[in-house]
Image 1 (cartoon, one colour):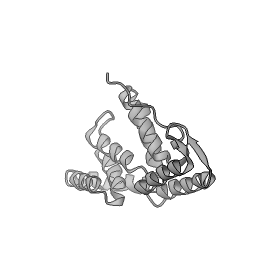
Image 2 (cartoon, helix red, strand yellow):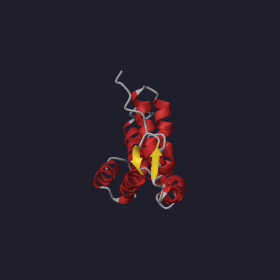
Image 3 (cartoon, helix red, strand yellow):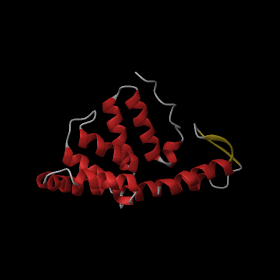
Image 4 (tube, one colour):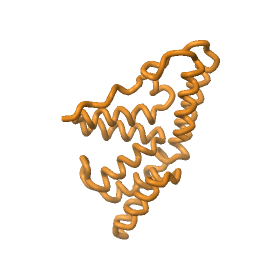
Length: 169
């Protein structure tokens, strides 16, 4: 079995929980804990993580480490494509073309159930609110340490967090 990736920065969970739980999912996956990996992916997805939604979509669509459920996979892929990231959108379009009309109808039902929790209107808004609230607490400090992220001046840590936040949204 391959070694797990480096530890996930614990302090990142306060600011960008989607990134943190996606990292935890990778750790669980590489450590052989498939159930925990899926659970962490779902938690990351709840915080608007498009990579997590994409990974869930591909996994369910192909039956990769989870029981195959093409409609559920398609629904996850639809959520991952909300921001029109080219690879996520292309994968969704490709998967959409491979399912039957019945599977599309079931995927649409799943998607409508999932949107209130995982859709950007809610999940990304939740993550942005969390980031803004936590970031406001550290703004202007002379020095700051975020466990596992970086040590040094407040400027370097806040800049790292702001860059991550900009990439996330």
